[in-house]
Image 1: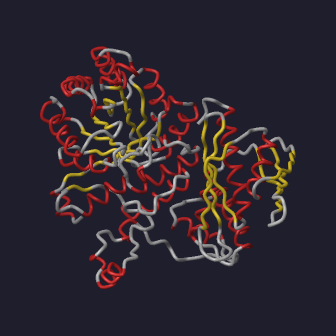
Image 2 (image 1 turned 180 degrees about the vertical axis):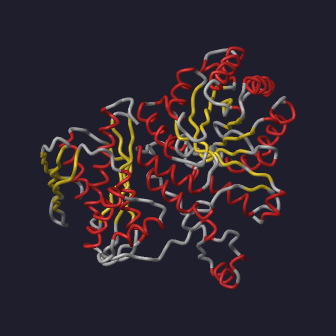
Image 3 (image 1 turned 45 degrees about the horizontal axis):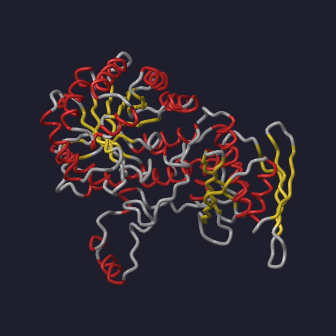
Length: 516
């Protein structure tokens, strides 16, 4: 947007909840290094607020949020808390060293939440909300308040509640469509009535937080903006509880493309959208649907002859978004075994990874190992090495040796040798329906855990017979679910590395019930 046009428009603040609500997607748990890398990328993307987590949920979560608060500069760093002192204390402990800290307090506001979840009457809960905001204000002047399930709450109660928490010191009022119940025209009208009828709301930032249960999260968010909301809470790729949350990239690009009807702007660095989307997908193990708006691989593909003809003559005939706007064109440079550290470091910077010292040395050595197996190492290969490194849990088990047997007239079998963190060597053999299944059975025998494999996904990251294969698995044990990730030019080795990655995460999770 030109400076002249931008001066006539109003800014929409982008509140990113990928690391909090997004991480609540089943199996999307991130470790500390992964959360930090996502937070760094969100800062490069230029979001206004990063909701880094829910610190009271576990000591590991508190520590991860604290690390983000200490290291990430630029965006406001926000932590979520229920409307109770213990939660608020934990949240402040996590973010107090942030350059710009914010406490986000929430409490149910609908009758169904009051009756069945909270088991308190509206008056008690209003008083609890007021006291919680006052308590949070002891720590910081930046306090956000959310009446959970607001779209199913009684409006008269909402008016009274919001007026009270604003008087208590709330500086941001967020209206959540917690279960994705609203329709765009209803939600927009609700936002408009709140602005008209809640005294003091004009002195706060009015925010919205929409879920996608009916596929309307983005539409509801845009309707809210048109009716006075100036902050939208959203997640990369739309990940989140159940059907997910409003997708950041869809809201941002809609505001950019439809400025004729939506005269607003954001401070996002649009060229980082594609990279951010890819990073979150890789680290969470949640694939991006091919037809996903804005960032799906088919978003700029054309198979119809009529469409192809039109695009060749003028892109605008069938494309309203230029892929280069979101940084969708990957770098074409590739590396070989003769490439030095400087070339590798340069390519890493192009990919958004500023690695130095020991971290760079680890990745460079892994690059050399891969370059010995492949003629050319592509940016996607290098990215995979970094993401695999970031995804690694503190290993209980490391792969020492792998041998498999398979054939049309043989029983698939695997011999696995693992080294434990105390240097104990453990070895088992097993059979299965194929070499990968046999390998997983052998690992289960070594660990003594009957892990359930919920899903298995294999992707070739580049092209050619020596392409690096990436395996993502989702695994369950004792009611807990994790994702594992592994890469190799050998798909069986990649599969075993992914399973071990998940196993090590699972062991950490089960070894400390309060861990993250």
